[in-house]
Image 1: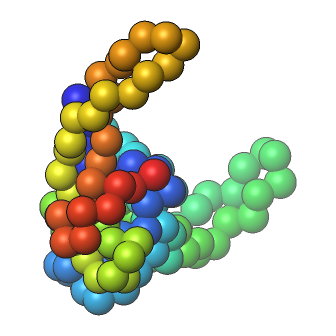
Image 2: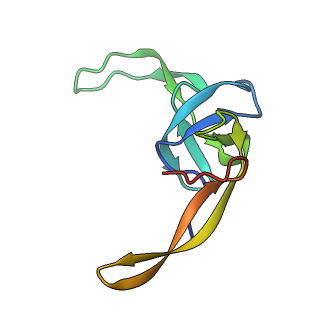
Length: 111
């Protein structure tokens, strides 16, 4: 199965307090959650450690559910749904079936 949203994708938030903001997916977490650069910033109280980290209040990015973001179409620069198409590729004399992510609005392949 091909993942609809991958690390490195440019996404736009469609729900929540950061609605309308755009960012790059930095990490994919279990249970359909992901971390987006500059989105869902929360303040966290941190205790000092023996390695020299100071205590205090630190701003970090919290996970957001994948249903609250949409991938940005590389051609139209607008949020789009993602589809999967199957195409045939010839590699080393063999024909191989490959699944490719496709933007629904423009029909263009996503990297």
